[in-house]
Length: 286
Ligand SMILES: C[S@@+](CC[C@H](N)C(=O)[O-])C[C@H]1O[C@@H](n2cnc3c(N)ncnc32)[C@H](O)[C@@H]1O
Image (tube, rainbow, N blue to C red; front, side, top):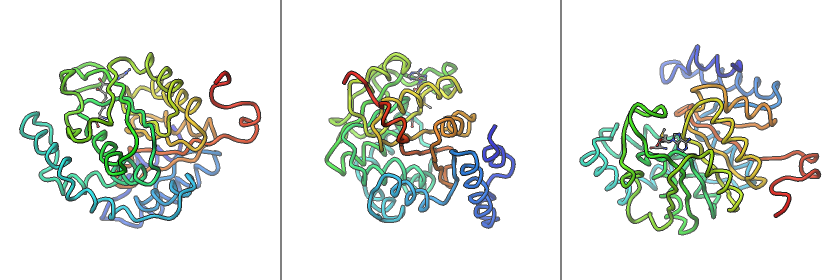
């Protein structure tokens, strides 16, 4: 396991009790990533947002709190959140505000970044309740631009690492009806569907949240990298389950980030070196 991940697991960040640990950890993880020629740097939510924005070539933008405030009164999301609690019993947070506080890193990356990047096509694997998906859909709805293609096997408790079951027709129940015209749901195995979708569409953003085994995660990251455009965005949930994300970054000399508030959420901008660009990236017969 890369040093930055084992340090994270061993010491954590210390949270509010030991704020200095965050600085130490940011420094250590950044140093490890640089020395390894690629890897994850853990940093404050605002710093992650600023760094990825710079990697994407976007102009300076607002802080994460701006996006949290945008979502505070987002009626469709609030209604879907309340319905998820009453109808599906799947709400971890006492209130919508509490949810926004807990999901601050996700708001930064799945909502804020997508508000600024204004992607035309986003592809995700792993939808289930659609809790993260709803933030992506909120960004597309607010942008009045773009669509999301979700690839998912409806979850069954006890299978494929899942502890909840959702019937096929209820997958994505966190996604408000008002956003759904921008959503396409493809039921099936990502191993079969992801390469096809990525080859057929010009995808700006890829999000992994399906099966978190090393083999499957490395498969999805590699296919996404190979077929996503230069400057596309790769997001992944649960990057601390194993070292797949860190290994992927290191193998491809890519510099990714994860926010302190939700360190299991990783992000990286897809970049190729000049040799790869000269030799050929993307589909050779397109
Ligand atoms: C962790 S859940 C997704 C959670 C979701 N992103 C959310 O925020 O609510 C993982 C989902 O991926 C699905 N899944 C697992 N392996 C898969 C595969 N090989 N292809 C497609 N979907 C898969 C599971 O059935 C489940 O629905």
